[in-house]
Amino acid sequence: MAEKANLKITGMSCAACATKIEKGLKSLDGVLDANVNLAIEKATVIYDPDKINICDMEKKIEDIGYGVIKDKVELALMGMSCASCAAKIEKTLKNLPGVSNASVNFATETATVEYDSNEIDKEKMIKAIKDIGYDAKEKTGVGIDTEKEIKEREINTLRKLVIYSAILTVPLVLSMFLVMFKVPGGILENPWLQVFLSSPVQFIVGLRYYKGAWNNLKNMTANMDTLVAMGTSAAYFYSLYNVFTKPSHEIHNYLYFEASAVIITLVTLGKLLEATAKGKTSEAIKNLMGLQAKTARVIRDGQELDIPIEEVKVGDIVVVRPGEKIPVDGKIVEGSSTIDESMITGESIPVEKGVGDEVIGATINKTGTFKFEATKVGKDTVLSQIIKMVEDAQGSKAPIQQIADKISGIFVPTVMGIAATTFLIWYFGYGDFNAGIINAVSVLVIACPCALGLAVPTSVMVGTGKGAENGILIKGGEHLQRAGKITTIVLDKTGTITKGEPEVTDIEAFGNFTEEEILKIAGIAEKNSEHPLGQAIVNKAKEKFKILEDHEKFEAIPGYGICIMINEKEFYIGNRRLMDKQNIDVTSIEDKVTELESQGKTAMILASRDSVYGIIAVADRKS
Image (cartoon, rainbow, N blue to C red; front, top):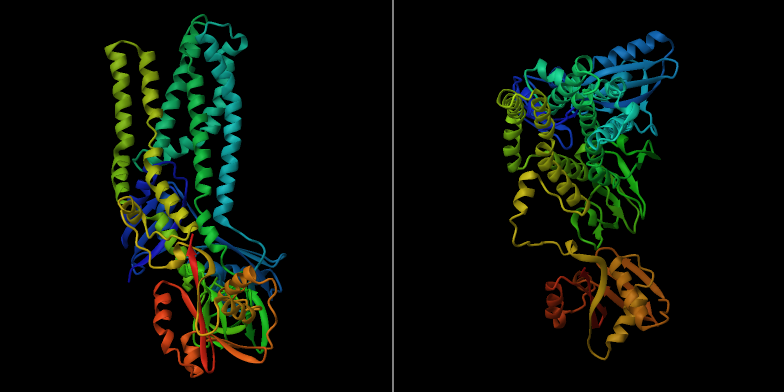
């Protein structure tokens, strides 16, 4: 059966890089499909695990000249007595499938493991350590976020390179302008000073482009690094040649050190801006992950224990108190409550839950304390599936991107051909070698394919990310592209377009009761209620009456309503099921209740054992 793997890639600089990695992965036996997204620097691979494993894919990516970010975890070890224990644990960890590197420090009793979360998880590592006679647990509070750490390091490095490069380039640019306007430049015109200033920019700041070009040359391909390396090298070495061959009185007409330095500085600045933008691509995912509870209260060996959510296992009995987030998915085994599931369903009104009902992780418990059995944990929970869907959507390709990918595949060789043609025309057609070099360099560096490769995936990433932040889940780039042709939107959930704050919309009085009396009785009844519908009635009653008396008796009937006593008279407020349960005849108002409910309102009936007095309807109004 085919499986899917997501690999985080480093070192890509343009669309040609993404295309090259994609082709390399597809060439592997056992890889059924591969999709590389430049904007989020991720490869999604469908493969046959019987023919190939993830380590083989990672090796292929590294052979092409790029890097793969691996997950990292620190484990606190217990039970070691000497250095041979550390060596034994290290060997065991390294032999696990999916672990690329492991280092055990006997002195600090810590294991640092680099691994692929597609193949192995932390629990399997801990189990392997326990199987050989030791114990381990994840170091909490360490907060190793490998991907974030690498991106921040890259941004800081690029920022330093841009500043360093700009400081050295400014005098070269100033010299160029002084020569242009025939103003004496003094020492700035000295060719050896220009060599001194431009060389660090060319070979230190520009080293990344030479490395990229070399990796491409080894694989007989070309990308943006190739264009930058060729263009700036042509300008730099042509200028250096002129330093040794041209007479001093006219040499300033043949120096183009500022061209190569400015190109490298601007391209590196573009890389900094690109890296900064990429660093923000995962904000939507992080916001969704922030919805999860951090800990869970489980019952083990008859004791309540607060443990990290990662340690909750299927079958654990979890205790949830009022106001707490439900840590994982499960089924209630004891107690009842109302639960705010708006983050999943869009419905603002909490749902009544009792024994046997399912609960969803990250939703909020409103009123009661209950116990539930964990049925789905980790990657299997509803929220984790939503997060995965958003990740997959951000990494998917829109149909229009296929066109961009085809163009980018032939773009760099075409540009190199045009640059060569430009030089030949100027040199052989006009006999101007100087102009030929400069114009060829201009073609090489101005035709960077970054925008071509980044435009569509960045649009998909931003579109799906913003959608997720606003509660709209878009399944992929194809659906996002199709959304541009939408003319009509049909919404099946009232919570999608409502305020999220229920309000009293209708009050119907029967018999000798007035609407004000119905509202006052209901307000007294719901005075201490925490339920949003009850709070809506109380808020409305407080607008009419300054003081709401206390009731003499109060009884909550979960799933039905409440029973109260005011001035020694008993009243019931609730749904039709409550009336049926108390044998109260509501036939005369059945049509009115149905009419209100058909309008999306919650109709609550006020009655005593011998008579129906009124209806109060509550609804969540459109925002």
